[in-house]
Amino acid sequence: MHYRNFTKDNLKVSALGFGCMRFPILNNDSSKIDEEKAIEMIRYAVDNGVNYIDTAYPYHQGNSELLVGKALKDGYRKKVYLATKLPSWLINSYEDFDKYLDEQLEKLDTEYIDFYLLHTLNKKYWDNLKALNVSKFVDEAKRSGKIKYIGFSFHDNLDVFKEIIDYYDWDFCQIQLNYIDRNYQAGEEGLRYAYNKGISVVIMEPIKGGKLSNPSDEIKSIWELSEIKRTPSEWALRWVLNHKEVSLLLSGMGELEQVKENIKTVSDAKPGHLSKSEIQLIDRVTKIYQEKIKVGCTGCEYCLPCPEKVSIPNIFQIYNDSYVFGTEDNSRSRYKHYIEKGIDASKCVECGNCEAMCPQNIDIRSQLKEAHKKLWM
Ligand code: SF4
Ligand code: SF4
Picture (cartoon, rainbow, N blue to C red):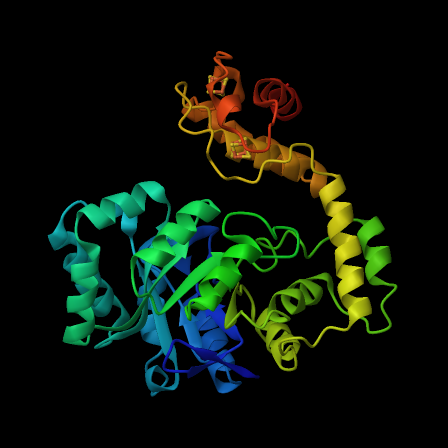
């Protein structure tokens, strides 16, 4: 394992953090964690150098925090930094801040949380938390010792990211980044923006939720060109860790073998470890993925809200995935949920408001029609 600096106190965190949202489960029910296996995985990781455990209020329908609390008994709590997240979308009053934090401390069976994040901030949640005086809550929670460091996880566009970064003296933040999403949401520019302000950065979705682990034969044949043989997941993890601005990446590990493999991968994946030719190889793979993208939507959400509630960027993401990753069945079943909720592409009345707002000049109305044809008809 290798360790990187974290927060302005230069804490040493393992380059691999254990994401606690994909534990093995029983009876196909995500609320029923296979406790024996999950605890074995966490303790194996800690025994082999992982010292960052990341959970959140909603993971495994509220049961991840309970499991983590159990896994960190028998002396494991003091060996790790524990991160969990405030459920931003459930906060309706100032009292709610303490209500959820206290509940989380109890579930985790701990006196304090090392790294507390405002979960999944976007403009809407952020504006609400600000109006409810979240900075006062954070200052008091730090003073009382319930939390040691404060950060946020993020899902919105780059402008919103910069606004949040500039608003408060954050210790760290958590963003999505992988080699095909270099300009998505905060992206590489956001990574550098935070780093240059002395804010440590945690990376989530380094393998794009597993989508980069099972590439097409075309992409496999490019990976084969490398003298050093690596799995597609390993290439993805290494690309992220090659950035000096990254403190650690999170992997939501679902089986012990994956824990072992990831620990092995990150052990020597230090900043700048990839050679020029390895970076070129990754760029070639990126280009192939990007050429398959049908709609160049960056997910910035400037087109929202649509008066008919059409979920424009999400629909384009599902549509793109079906081409880029060949996941047609999966894309169609994801799209079915949008139909059921009445926020699918067929609800578009072609007012054109969204197109006037789109910085990518996407012909949104006609692309929505194409997406609907592909995903539903
Ligand atoms: S053109 Fe369609 S998708 Fe765009 S804002 Fe109007 S109704 Fe919504
Ligand atoms: S369609 Fe355009 S405005 Fe809407 S999210 Fe995509 S890039 Fe942004």
